[in-house]
Image (tube, rainbow, N blue to C red):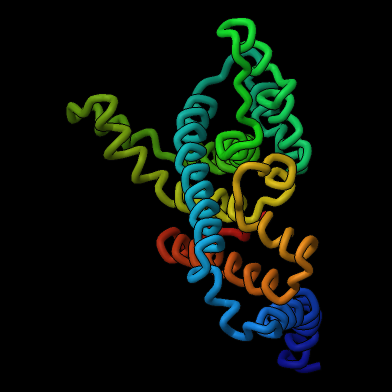
Length: 271
């Protein structure tokens, strides 16, 4: 057997898998999006229709805010946890990554138990201030839910990147008179930039497409996954749902491609 034949036989299962589970479904999705009454104009609806455009902006803004806050929290926590050992350290790291085991619906239910109509926050504010504060079903509740499942994904990447930092660079900066904040700004942050880009892109893509949490919480706010679901199930508008799905995928893919161009080959597919 020639080397070319052997390579072809090894490549054939990958090609078949890619065609069956990626190329063919994507092609069918694109064709379905253009099969409705609007035709190809359905793909422009996400930008031209006020409702769909507002939903897109809500989704992108929420994903961006989630990414920024997640990076701040995960960077501070990752630096501390990687460089300090104390009793219960392993347990704390395990607890911080525990939300990875929860599906989105469970995360949404936990936010409801925290800040829903019968939640802990509502009971406390009613006793303290005489009025019940409920935000689980708003943009704030959805943001909190996205943070809950985004932080564990990012903190693991940051901790791995911090472990690879060269301590001698920080020691050299201190020896030259740099203060703690300047060391962080000029040494640590640039060294962690690839990890920021990689984990931030994954957090953004995950928040853009999160459905389970949005399905549980998004009663007072529109996000694209919920809009696609309602167009498909309640309105039976399969063509528009497909067009919106393609639009959501293109926005997410563009962010991942941009991050990959700046962050190198460390950008993985979002889970």
